[in-house]
Length: 292
Ligand code: AMP
Image (cartoon, rainbow, N blue to C red; front, side):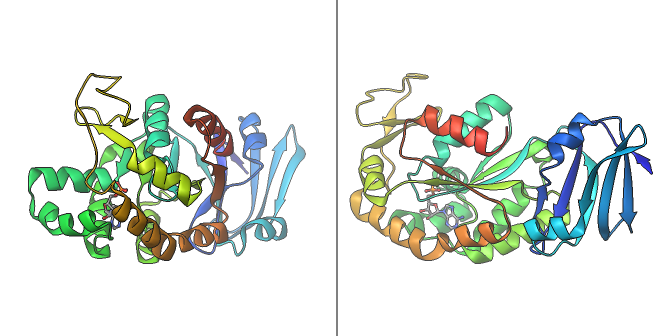
């Protein structure tokens, strides 16, 4: 027997290396201070039982868990600490990933890792990475995997990501998803969820061709914003927000990125929400879906 730490979380590690909080998490949390009995070896748990006042209150059986999670390699009991969320935002360009990420950052302070923003900053600064990426970005094509994987892997080493991160625009290919899993597994900071913001492509074409961004604070507005409503900065249109490039970006998304929806569904990490609504409504839905 061992004490259940305050705010304990049961995590089941699935066959693809991701972990999910077990549905008993909420119960487990409310039993903070109760005792937990682990059955099986610490690295390959077969089941675990939470007991309170010597009465078993919860028994998680391997069979029940594996039914929900697939093959389980490990179940462990960790303190949640200051961890907030490790999430990937999925969705076509223009689905509203950046908008939703900005809201999550504002409320939770979790670092927002947007590969598009990182690449645009590199292009603006004229770094070797920026020079390499520019032609791909202008055409709406993907920057080579090895370039982008290196960029994200490096960013994930920064200590601010220990409390969580919101990955936006990455992964975009299966190779990137596999590399991300490997890196997060190495860092022992697995994903909590992949949030898919689902929007019809024709809605996206309209949205993106009228999208304007603030040069100063990155605010995402529309063609009707003469200046930034947040900081009065200058609004501009991204080079790749013209119709031809938008259509190519959607083709690239369909071909290279949309298979990731099934990938994360297979890991039981996929959470899908309808993104064709007011941004605040989408946000409320996202928080509920992410159990935040
Ligand atoms: P975004 O702002 O996420 O729409 O990204 C803008 C452009 O940056 C994309 O059209 C790609 O050219 C490039 N890019 C961003 N993230 C990635 C990624 N994960 N893999 C490859 N290219 C990317």
